[in-house]
Amino acid sequence: MAEEDPVGGTESWCVSHSTAVASRAVGAILALLASLILAANVPVAIVLLCHIHKSGSKGLCFVLNLALADAMVGFTVMGVAIDEISQPFYLSQNFCVLRMAFVTSSCAASILSLILVACDRHLAIRKPFHYLQLVTGLRVGLCLLGLWLVAAIVGFLPVFIPRFRRVSDHWKCSFFHVFDPSYMLTMFCLGFFPALFLFLYLYCDMLKIASVHVQHIQKVKQAGLAGACPPPRVTSDMKAMRTVAALIGCFTVSWLPFFIASVVQMVCAECLPYRLIENFLWLLGLGNSLLNPLLYSYWQRDVQLQLSQLAAALRRRILLRLGHGRCSPGRDTKALAAVSCLELQD
Image (cartoon, rainbow, N blue to C red; front, side, top):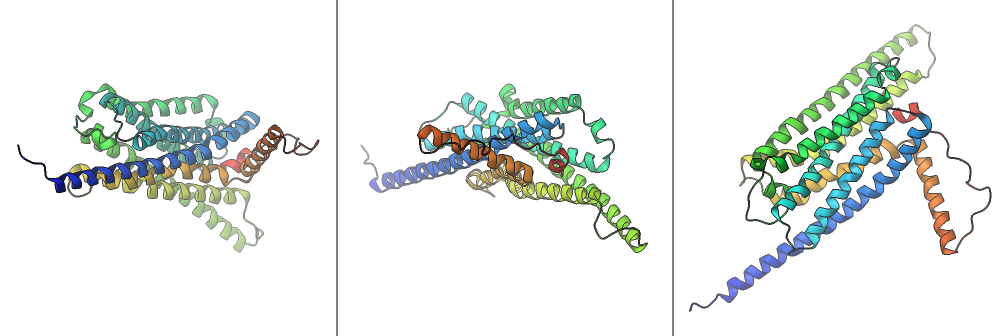
């Protein structure tokens, strides 16, 4: 009987051990990121829901849907993080496909929600006098219903079409091990890149509108018919442009490296290791769900005030439960201030 090589066995054990440690490290990072995503989006969703109930703003429904989609991203990614931490416990192929389908649907819903928010602000600038007539409750509901339907179709397509799955000997639950390259290439080319081009078009069009307004103001100032302060309409347009510019920048920086590297890896598997994409670039893309509530909600002064009051109320309630504090009568008990729809849209 041939004797086993102790050196080879030791090297194999070292490689296996280092892989397990790396998987647990990635799982810990994913768990932390998912927790931060949930902690950032859930309070924003609660505050926006109260704003919509008070003000009746239809456009804020798109921002609320974005917060819910990002919270769903954090919830689904938490399951992937648990799988990474619990190595070497392996899932079945079908369950892994189902889990990654939920992750893909959540990310698709988040990206589509970004598109709806950008379109809503573009419409508010392009046709400000007809905005309230165009953005009705029925149309908003149909847009949101179509958004989640498209996201579900994109994510669960491999579940219902077996040829979009990849049968692999590797049991790691990840995109590249369970999804066929043809499905991923189609999803990237028909999903991400058109969305990026649409963002660029909306921003360029708003930039064109704002430049026309600035030129008009300069002509009026030269004629001596206006003061030094710009009209509220132009200020609103510039705020909306800065918001959309931040949207495009963060979306591009977060997701573009992942999608480009994924396409390169599918075309040339030896050119780029998939571990780089899964362990680093995918985390960068998920970070977009953490940045979205900062861009769309935390920058609004009214939302910041509501969140601070909500945190203060929770703190007082916790102190009362623990017996370390007593709520002073008449302090911070008045109703939350109503949020201006126009300020939030700006």
